[in-house]
Length: 281
Image (tube, rainbow, N blue to C red; front, side):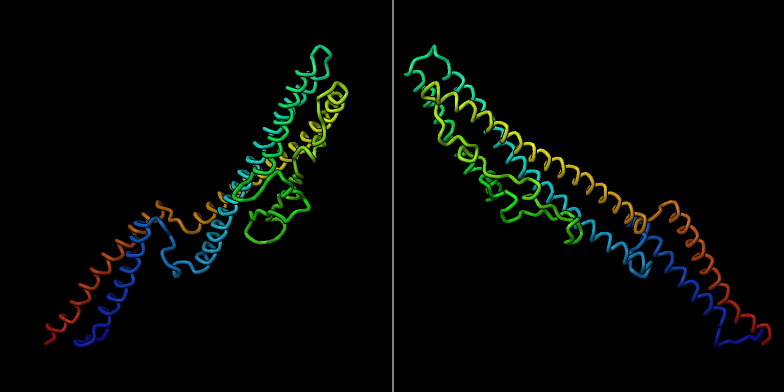
């Protein structure tokens, strides 16, 4: 092997590998310190691209979950109002039944009619005033034929990633007029009997409406559970791509530390090679 004074190829070779090993050691330290395997795109270009796409899906699905929770809150609000109206109907049925008996006088029926009218007015007030974030709920605004309230729950705008509350609820107006009670009275036995039949029909009608609301609520709850499962699965996929395996990283860190130390030692040894020329001189 040729001996040269001005060009020490062995030293240059050792220095180059020392720098490479130093870079690898720095990368290992970064991964250990951050807990992330992909600290830069160059670490795994394909994996970095895929993980970014998955993270975008996660953010979108999390917003979808919030949208579903808002939809559930809206339905809960409507359900609460319908529960109050159902209680009113039950009380109206009770008043009508009391007015049909012949043991009470006309003055008592007038008192019963007064309460009947007040409760019927309250039912209509609830229908007009119940709203969620400025949207009326039980005045017919959530009927299937009204402008749609759509919940975006998926990663794109396809039909499978959207829920139309109007179609699911078909919540027609719930008031004395729609329930056939606006002209009913209990001022006489005959009118009270007719009102009793009308109330029976109204109670059945309201029960069907509440059933649709309950079904829609169950659907949103199941959709939310499914969405959370998808989010969890995507988090798991991102973790597999991006997160560092600490046990593996410790082994790599140890290897790179040894490589740096060995390279540094070889640099020192290679720098001594030109001294072998002195005995020749």
